[in-house]
Image 1 (tube, rainbow, N blue to C red):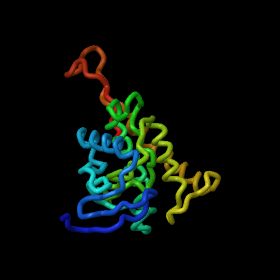
Image 2 (image 1 turned 45 degrees about the vertical axis):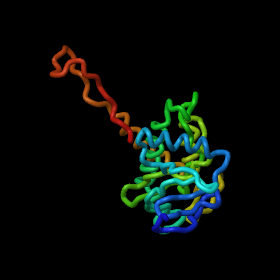
Image 3 (image 1 turned 90 degrees about the horizontal axis):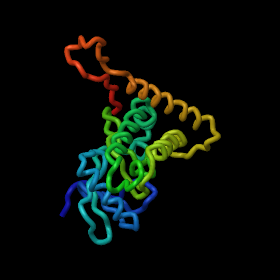
Image 4 (image 1 turned 90 degrees about the vertical axis):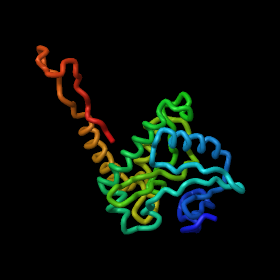
Length: 219
């Protein structure tokens, strides 16, 4: 018998998720075979920000529990400083970038650019204190697609919800202010990522001839 914390998990659009010790159990559906294929691929390539598939038992999928918490569900006082802060936004999109990189050119992506999570939002993102966003959950909407589709949905997911979990209208001032803030954080990060590395000296005087300039990486 699995021991430890146990009980229904709060939030989420799909009902029936519950924690049993170090596992999460959820009803299976038509989406389950593809999601399990995706999660097994993520495990194989070493992407740490997703649950692992342990199997299916009594009509439920059994996944590992992603350690951390979802502030919008369990810690409202942390939503503004953790989720909506520049550091929180940057950590969430860095995690999304790493996820997309892990699925690019993979079997589950098929002929598409990547596999979209399909529902990127603060409600499906796990945070761990100063580390920021560390995991993605609720993969029911995963499908082959493009980075821009998934990232665009994530901008909406962060921007058009307030700290009480209420959806804002796209026409509201609060929503557009948040969009501008998210864009500013991402633009600053992109600018840092584009900074070139050391250039090769002209005239062949470099101590390491043939070395090319390399751009800074974006986490």
